[in-house]
Length: 512
Image 1 (cartoon, one colour):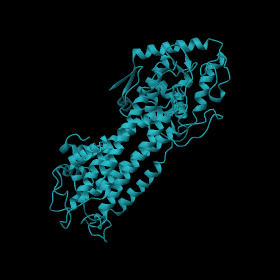
Image 2: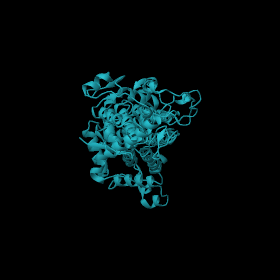
Image 3: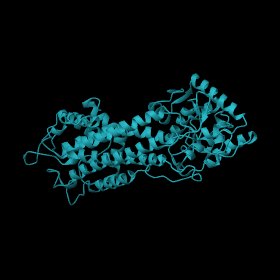
Image 4: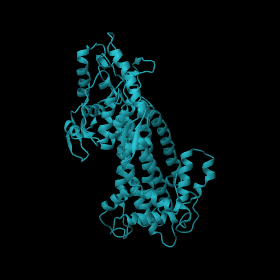
């Protein structure tokens, strides 16, 4: 099994994906263990002094003015975890919780949190045992960390609360720890706070969304090319020299992908009555511009994620000179903004795909295709309601594009009076990614059927490869009306599992 070694300088996005989705093992580097021990010495020294230090010998948030005596500090750390584990609603996905735990471990191993090495090792042991704490949908405001989600994870480290075992069954966390020979931790000064105070949930979801969207943007270039071909559109607008004079990198990449997919097509540039095609509709002609802008948005979001992956997000933090200082680095604004930005771009990509699908189904705009791509229009409805489903998904995408990060709600007796709502931005982006996959699947379903209905002219070799692969995957071609939902589900899986891109690349080679 693949192993990810966590050091003091952060981790990579591929590390997060390997642990969250691939079940990779986690190990602490010797450098990280040494840094943990050194930072703990500083915290222990401060804890022994009579002067109050926030997070070490005081309460938290609006209660930070109270000095806590040594005999109550273990109780204080235990209490903050228990009281903050106040999430509600449905469970979040296993991969999200694993990313959340791994990223908190990443910050702990930076040597800036003051957590003991044995606590960090327990975090790694829980991940390696396949134990996943139950984390709920609601409870994070995206400031002072993803507090409730992280608290539910910390609660499991203490042997309390519920967790899912490697068999998928939810049981008391204490039982699962005991079965795997893991001793529950007894938290000491600073440690409870350090386990709760980070942007780890929203960052983990950002990293997974980036991976998913990168694949979907390539898929969208392929479905756009299929629609252009089915509509007898012109591929001249994809010429590199046209995109060189507006040098947005994403736009150039999308145009190049579409051109590669359409290479060798006999369908492009025709009209049903042989009249010359002057211009295609915007949804066809401007596909590289819209998808390209989304690609450039992905690039910006990836830069933010990389910076956050290299960060130690905690409050207070232990500095190399021995100071323990309060700060505001836990605020989720940088991550929240790009999560919302990605939701906007994804909504627009879904919207333009739906417009192309609608054009394929409209006999007045499809350049000779049958109404709704039906076998016997009137007797058959064809793909009429598939487009309704797509339109409903697009409408939902537009609602999901409303920024969460533009909102704020004060908490902690007005101490925490401006929050990022980054967790909420991440949760709605996950929904948007799933909906975009379905939207592209419906465009794929319609466009492949439309290409097959064009008789006498051969599609591009890459298009033919996609059609053959999607039919082998159980998505049926033209014909009389049938139960449509299974076909759409199969098309969704075909896109989601990367088979669409893989099929096109058997002809085109690697797409961008």
